[in-house]
Image (cartoon, rainbow over all chains, first blue to last red):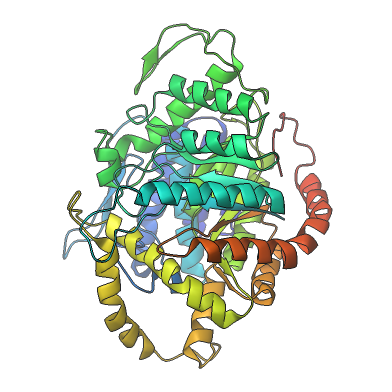
Length: 122
Length: 402
């Protein structure tokens, strides 16, 4: 059962625990900032688990899609923060708005948590 | 564990013509209604209808409230689900959704499940000028307000980012108070957890494996126990997962009858994310033309150590691992057992897909209901006990049909 307390990277764990507290106090902007910081840390330390934008499951017609394992999804770009990844550059997160909602904050918290857990499981 | 059907009303174009014959879409709808009527008699718990727009062949269920109303008139017990309604106001004004949900709930004697979502591809939501980057926020705002419209007398009005409305009493009110069970379409893990934090059910369209499903279920219930900001006036702690289902007397017969439909489902889903030539693509013909070549290439894949050598058996094995339910009653029973052990509340089956034959679907529904479903229904009280333990200490009002 993945939860922030199970993340072994101390930086990511601390940021995600803070983000959870921000969520509980309804400070969604702060929660998103913590998630962005945690994910940026993963970009630095575990670039192998960062999924490039546009790698959408089922994004092309495929005869055997129903037989394949669902691949890891890219950073959710529908909640106000984009993952910019130009060739040759390090990927970076850029916020496209100032005010975030509960669904934005939860989406980024859970996605970052999932990525961190995937990283430590190898 | 409970069971249901999920419909998209897939309507492949004829292989040998550029567009549908006048009766093709009507045939699919009539067959779906027969399947639902039969499923109700057989004891299936749910039928859910998707809402999609402009996604030719993939989904012709664009006005699910109409088909669900027809289903309500032909059935007695089966619960009638929107899986889902697109909530961004450009697609559906929240007040119109509240009115339609309440009306369906009244005419069906309180059998509605209110599934919500955003809409998917650019083809679809772009048709309504909804922006991809705003659709989630629009969903949250519209769904919260729509639920208030059902439960507040009068609805006090709202000034929002995506819609505004003056004070009105939105009528009729649903039979289920304060509102029917609420769900969100969740094809990604983080949306399942969002559902938990908002106190709503997760319609898992991710085709997750049993292992993934169990991890999600445990985290989901942990989060729902801590839900502080429910989206509606009652919570619906529930997890559904979906799979493609075709049951036949033998595994071989099931593959023969069902595999092509499941493969077409994946193929046309992928096609929807590309550049469509509106009104001019024949996706089914393309699928059939590519199938032979790709099947040959796939045949060259070597099986992993755990997989059966035989190609047909390997396809079944892989589908079972990916949340698909295609095979003999014994094979499907084994798949269902794994989801039951993962604490999934209900399985929803896509049975109508591609060019699958109506009579094969009807046989499949009956065989599954007679040979697989009863033991799971008998054990459902054990699952309900597990749920009660998970929900111990929850003080928010609960409205759930599980």
